[in-house]
Length: 211
Length: 211
DNA sequence: GTCTATAAGCTGATAGAC
DNA sequence: GTCTATCAGCTTATAGAC
Image (cartoon, rainbow over all chains, first blue to last red; front, side, top):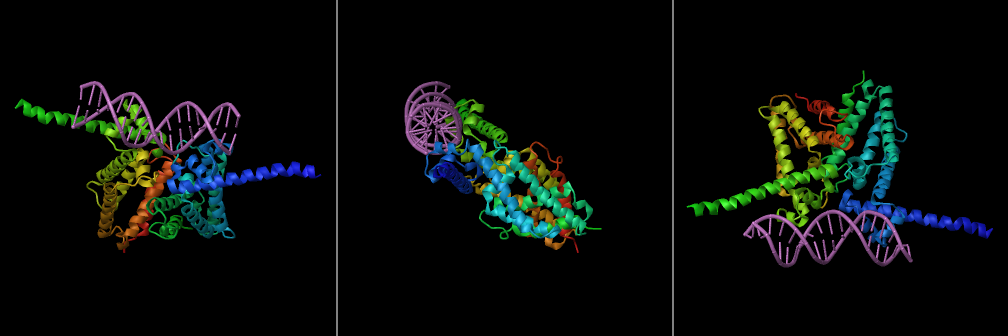
């Protein structure tokens, strides 16, 4: 029985250790991107910080691109989770406003990841289908809130449309992009750009008057 | 006298040749960025296309960063020139609309340069004061159009403000950013994003009603 | 003087043997 | 996990060609 336990636990312990190392690599990679830019990510630098030799990282990721891919997937998941948490228990325009606000806050708190997710600064890197699926789910969440807003009479029927989604994503991408490019270090809600967010939401709502 | 002419002309020819080479390097650099991304610019690749060895480029630019710097400066100048040409002979909202439209078109026709100008994908590269001065001039041009629009009663007094400038730049950065990230190859006026530009201008105008 | 080339130092990605 | 090796890129030093 103790043998059986050993047989089960020894691999488990190794597997756990391996997962922890992978987690550490990804955290260090995000830190490096934050300091040197998305395209400044270097496996050698990550290895130095982890205290191993660069080739050792290939035991965990098959290539630099694979690290980008995992960062992209997890970034999408966390961004979506941040939005969902803020929308919890809310509906319609209220949910939309809170979700996008939380998404903007997350983006400025994770600038490097946000750049990787929303601006594709590394053309050689193509996001995986899983990553894109999360992105599609985020759009679905927003679309649901729009539909609710239409149902409740907050917005006109035209707001339940792809066009409205594109308008919305354009507005939010504008705020985040301007804040990131022109005000490094300034958090969400401060500076000259992200405070225009409520105003943009008002403009959006005004573009789809009920009736 | 022929000696004197030789003394003057020989240096001129060399200087001209030098300027042509610099021009060629910058054009090749833009092509490389277009193919491999802004951060994918490589002096070795430029040298290959120019038919020289990489170290030779250092006779023309002291570093890779210096090439980025010159691309940034010229990009700002051309973007501003495109806007100004479209605004020629117009005033107020009409000038603003045409200028920003031309600016958007220029950005999608020179995606790599536009990314370099407006999204800072290379954190190690800081734009030169001259480059930033051109950027400031572009804002001044837009501000003038806003002032005209207020004077003529097209917009309310609040439109002649920094806040309005930030709102405007946020809107336009949103369209261009979304178009570049999500629709590579799709020109200005086509696709799902840049067609919302007129709508954004209408929303902007609605945000500053005269009265 | 000015351009170009070759050589070499340094860093990084990555494959392969141990 | 490592060490070794290859290859590409930026950059400097140096020497020859025009």
